[in-house]
Amino acid sequence: MERSMRQTEFIIIGGGPGGYEVAAELAAAGRKVILIERDRLGGTCLNRGCIPTKCLCAAASALLLISTASQFGIDVGQVTPDYSRTAARSNSVIDQLRQGIETMLRDVEVIHGEATLKQDKIISVNGEDLTADHIIIATGSKPASLDIPGAALAITSDEFLSLTELPQRVAIIGGGVIGLEFASIISAFGREVTVIEYCKEILPPFDSEIAKRLRTMLSRRGIKFVTSARVTSIEQGLRINYEAKRGHDSIEADLAIMAVGRRPVIPSGAEEAGIELDSRGFIKVDELMQTSVSGIYAVGDVNGLCMLAHAAAAQARRAIGSDVNLDVIPSAVFTQPEAAMVGLTEDQAKAKDYDIMIGKASYASNGKALAMGEADGTIKIIFARESGFILGCHIIGPHASDLIAEVAALMFGMTTREELADELVHGHPTLSEIIPAAARNAR
Ligand code: NAD
Image 1: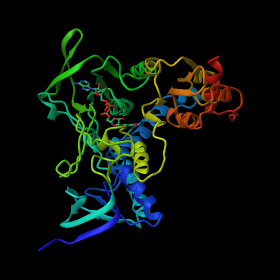
Image 2: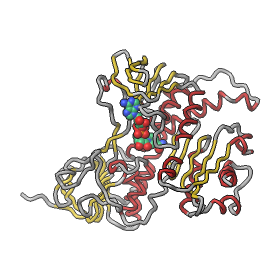
Image 3: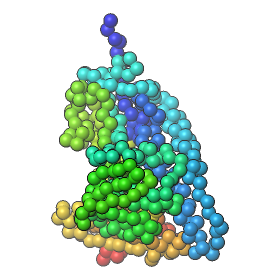
Image 4: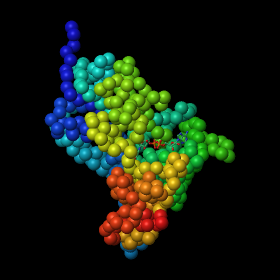
């Protein structure tokens, strides 16, 4: 007997930020949308990524603030962090946000099940065949691991975020975004942390000057870094073996966390249905996020273009025809202090042969930063000398992730260095005053 086929306008596979935001937007505009999710709504960002990490960061920031309270003339007695309560708070924040997503999706048909792709744009789920004019794959990514002996002895970021207690000595393999955010949290709870990073500097995609400054600031908090070191094996116990410039070495730890990047989650049947993957295993897309099959799009981590929740949501809007600007995407590392960037690094701007001007301003010269006891930080803005346009901005210091949003807006609006320095008024006393200060200092 032939299976019946249900036709709709949009099918979205994956209920993370790449899927649910655009699903809600389309449904609000009266379009017929089916969203298929095999797990909980919210994706990695809500359930195993940004949100639980930020809840832990909030606790880490509170602990660090308490530890510096005496500068405000406040003596604090015994401080007793209880990690199990910190972790429980994350779960209640996640539940609250998930309810918000469910409300957002009230006009979307949400099917809980595993979607499989078939030929001719057919999606099979829970025994039913569906098809649509537009199909968006937003299936995300999962933690990658190293192909080394004993790799399974290390836990992934997913497992770290479900721990309810922290051991005393923690080794983190990978000094990228996830490794550093976890290092900063674990150290704030008074545990010993060592980060082992393969490259010569942590945070390889960030401006090297900012990455170095972050490493220095985190080292001052007691976090140990081993750079230019390739982890080669993990032994029971735990012993983490690595190869560094000076030869083989190792460290002992009670817990090892693997934070060496993420791999795409490709829905089953995708390749058989004609969807091409690139050499790294991500789904190949064109500028409109369309895959090698006409009418099937892939957005977010699964296409490997930019593994950030807001990039996934923006790419999904591109896939439904919006002319969203995908060139200006801010990013941040939620360490204590935060680091944030948008646009090109200094090295990238030079490699592209731009004639550049660099303007820097220190938090220490900002009235509000000093008053708030948040004076350790720097902003660096890279301008194109001739046009005055901002090519990139790099910030390290408190509230960097919020400050970068203004610079992203200035880049989007093509504000010049002269306009920023001389014409745009900033409130006083605010931390945002360091942005025009950097523009003035570029003179
Ligand atoms: P990453 O690519 O940012 O960092 C992985 C690090 O591991 C790199 O620095 C790499 O050099 C290092 N590494 C690789 N092999 C190694 C080895 N054998 N020994 C030691 N070090 C090794 O990956 P991630 O930190 O796992 O994050 C995954 C993705 O999730 C990233 O794309 C990131 O942007 C995204 N993410 C973003 C945020 C945020 O925006 N705040 C937070 C979490 C994750």
